[in-house]
Length: 164
Image (cartoon, rainbow, N blue to C red; front, side):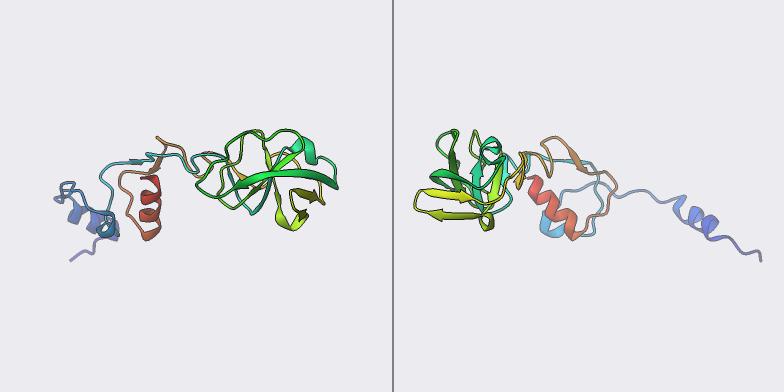
């Protein structure tokens, strides 16, 4: 009796195999399953430019040199956008995940500042875009992130949940 190679044996076994029909499964039961169709993001993440650090949202033109003093005009918590654009000479206290106010284009981390009342001293200069997670950095709505035929892992399920 002649021996078959692994490839030939596998080919013979799979010759008469047919895929199971597709079925829907809740995320909690999808670990280890194989996708029948590609999955596209239904949302953009982050949905807007957000702060990656706790600190102050400022205009980069205002902090190109330091030290400099800016007027603190309010606070930006995660999930609560700021009410008005920043003007020259102004700053807004911002927390990680807070939506960057219109007019601001950089975040000064709190470790590089000293605050007294409505005045914040920025100790180090900063360039445009520092410590900002730009809109769509993780993924954009409509982007295919998981492809047909992919076996799902716990990490994939977390991504699918984030994609909505």
